[in-house]
Image (cartoon, rainbow, N blue to C red; front, side, top):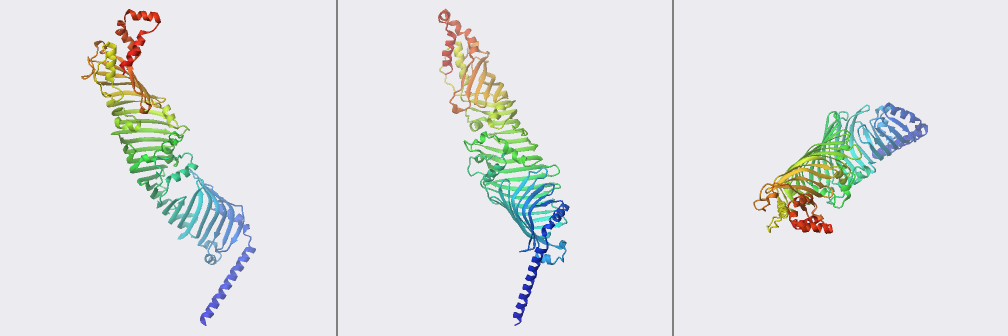
Length: 617
């Protein structure tokens, strides 16, 4: 009986409360014209430093919580943020509302819901960010450090899908947020999922946290970015699976008053990269440090036949880390081993500084092909056509190992050293080669050339000039030379060798030459001088009249073995005629002279043609 009376009392009380609530709702809806508060709301916003205009209607909401909805809101903080909201709903809890005794300042919690909106953030020295189709919901919002849920979704960067879910706690005093904590954070950008936590304190000037991503395809993300930023080019790679297995872990500390630091570990197709970003806020400088033990670089080269080699954005990938920071930048890279298909680069190190679209490489070091390369460089991208300058140095490079891989040439061996200063400009490889200019010097220790035996060529020419006939001596297939030294200049795609010197046996060789870098063809003038009666201990004997006398040779050929062009070296015909006038031509006799007078032919020219063919075989 007592229980029955209790339930009857409870039911009657609930009906009374609900009746009163509905009566209050009906009274408020009919008696209070909420649209009359538009100007008050806009004025209150201006007092808080926010420019606000309401273009739609205001309406009451009562369930599940009492509040108001505002349509067609336009806002701006007059500094960096601005935007529009299709519908904004603000509400408070029933218990909070009933306990305020009419004083709105006593409200402790509330809820915010945004349906359809657009926000643009464009701060000084920052890339502008625009969020479209913004939807947000946060309930039981408190500013005393208590946690409340928040979820948001939006489109950013040209339609990329972005969503956030987290538990958030805020401590605020007046209009200032003193601390912010995001726990159980989940962020989704298309198919990338990021989880972690972020904590901000000291009026949000100090932020720390950690983030981890799932495994995703970087190629797909770059393809999306390329649609937004034309500077980004995504070539087809030699390995179709390259850059499709990527994940990132990161821990960070931001102190906007001094220094910020981000430590990340990126796994790229099973390869670990440590990436450290340091920000000096007072100097507005970003330093990026990348280290890795091994990278299989051959997997990330453009696929054969890809148009990437002729792309107009050849230098664009170099500019990305610098373009994202509007200030001073530095990128330092240390790689233990960079593996290619046929060779490896070890102990790679580079240090590049950037400011105002000008990059300066202050150091480049690497070990390869038994030697070391060093260099400094400058890349100026302030104009439509990038300009650059290089000062490379090569020490102890094994040409026998390097040229077959780099130039598909197996005819030259030796240990090379080089120092040069080179300038150029262009957007493609061909235009860059055609623009090259500069100078330098080189030396090659113990060089050899497999396509030509210089001593044999000289002996054949000497036999021809002295009319002694050719010997049946067996010759090696190539030439082993003494150390080669010379200087060179670059001029519009041609490498001009001003002077060089070397020797083989008792033959001293000096001269000049040129190499067409585009056609891969060379033309070398060599002056041979014999300072002995024989060319070498195993060579040929030479007429005394040809000793200590300069005999010029012209050598032509191609560095491209696939061209099928054999190297050709022969004496200079003009000098050869001069020598023949003192030897062979004197023995021709009057009969040749008579034939010349009768038919007008040149017996010397005919003789040269026939004997040269025999001499160079």
